[in-house]
Image (cartoon, rainbow, N blue to C red; front, side):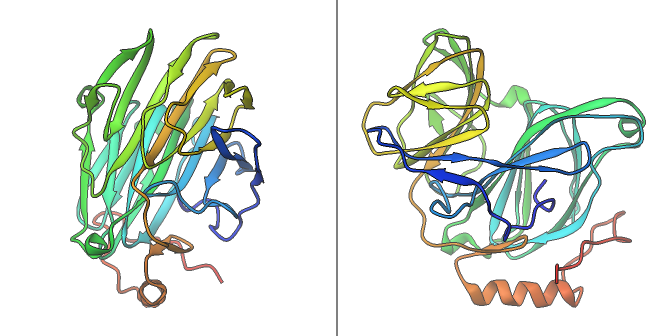
Length: 305
């Protein structure tokens, strides 16, 4: 969840690789949140973004007992789009633009913060009162400067809307952008790539092209040009034209990338191309000038001091 780890706490280990295909290998830092772990790969020192992607969190896998679970109070964002994708479980999204949506495995939730939005991430009571699992990815997409102050919007795409195909006997899904001969209907603001693949041990996948790209190993392990990329690691790839990976065991990966984007500044849940805009957003949140969330306006996460 975007609010569970302060963005100033970036302790992931970055290791330069002497490999034609890998520019950097990032080992995500795990945080135990009381039965729920989150691993962050972006941003870290030495790698602030990949294409438009400025934030990459791996949530879980976690098993919750009845009464426990996700309960993220209202918090703000500006100048980005958040993208949530679940492997297991569900999350109830509410935002100050009035949208209420349950996200389930295979769906895409895209919340365009634009000029400013507040949202919460909780669970339906009937789900919270059962034992259940949660596992997924949450990313932030930087918006082009001309779109940073766009009107806040929310887009939901069902699992059946997301194109799936087979590449070299490997099932892949293209959540955003075009790859493997298919194109996702999910809204984009710039050239963007986001896909996942599930490989069996010994299978080889040729990776799609993008100006900048990376591979995250959600489970399992792979080799890229003979270099090991272990579980919960992100390989930042070079501009080598043809790059393939070999699964060393049953493996699930996410592929991200797209057009190179200019500098983005982050402070807590705020991200923008302008430091002054972040300062304004901080003061607006402290003064409670952000719009409230219908039916979820009794709590909020204060700006950390």
